[in-house]
Image (cartoon, rainbow, N blue to C red; front, side, top):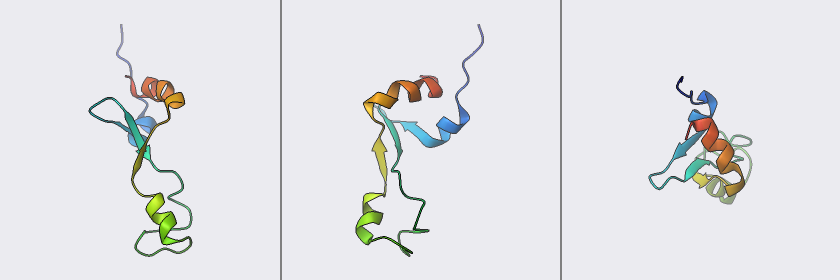
Length: 70
């Protein structure tokens, strides 16, 4: 039986933690700000809120795990 291939787009967007949770980048980062140190639009609060990673919702984990080959 052939091996499963990981979806290359999903492998760039998600990563799995040691406990098995799936992390993704916070949405809303691209528009309105090139860098957090030099905001073009939006408040500093918005840039802080959109920084970092968040856990993928439970409703989406099954679909993402299938794409990652888990």
